[in-house]
Amino acid sequence: METSVNKSTNQGKKLIILGFGTIAVLFLMYGRYQDPELLTPSAIDSIQRIAYGFYIVLLASFGAIAFGIYRYHREKVENKGKDLSTIIALTTWNSKSRKIFVATFIGYGIFFSLISGTLVYQPEVDFSYHYGAKIPSGFVAPCCDGPGYMPQIIIYLTEHIGLNVIPVNLVLQVIVSYLVGLNAAIAVNAYTISKKGRGASSIGAAAGLFIACPTCAGTFLSVFIGTASGIALSIALTQLQTFFIAISIPVLLITPYIMAKKLRNDDGSCKISPS
Image (cartoon, rainbow, N blue to C red; front, side):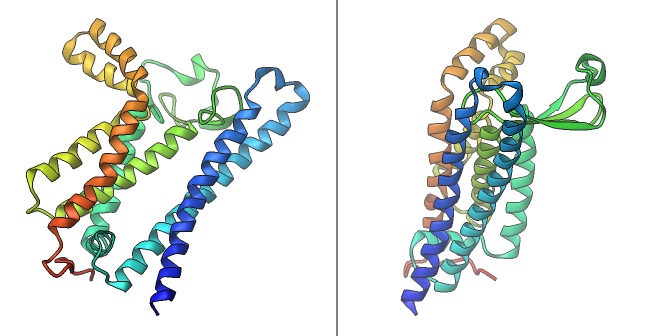
């Protein structure tokens, strides 16, 4: 029985690894089509079809990761072990935690969309007049930018509201929103955890806000410290984008384990019922 459970749990891990591995390969492979010199009239249609295929594979990868995480958590709950990963799974398996996770995931995802420029609102710009766009309409722009930034999906919803989906932003949005939702679901159950543990979670969530668009941080802060200083800060934050990624995601990954320790009994079992 133990061998069967471990095999099933490993299958969940394999799906997660497969999903992320596919995304990485997808970004690298599509980057080969970003040379403007390759965008000849005869190649445009082919690259456009490849762009559509890019998003089909990307969505399939998200599906594999989501199913892998679900399977991994389910097996941890059924196995009822005493490791911290099991405590996290048991803590987030009840209906209350699921509702908190879903609400946080969606809410944070929308907020992330706004600050990263995925969800665009420009009241001073008339899309049909300035860009000649048909309202509503949308298209996939296949070229040309660095790996992870193309192909882009551009959608005009109204004259002033639209979507600009950039692959790397989309991936980061899903990852960070999931981790913030997971932290929130655990934190609600772990209300007795130390201030140090809560602080770590808050730092990770705040840093995650600026991953996709660190220049947005400068724009936001310019309201408080002046436009010139805000622009300078925007440039500095752009250069530190890798730093923000480096500190936010690991913190969001580590914090659930810190909080899980507060939810573990002396015998290693979980204080929270998974029902």
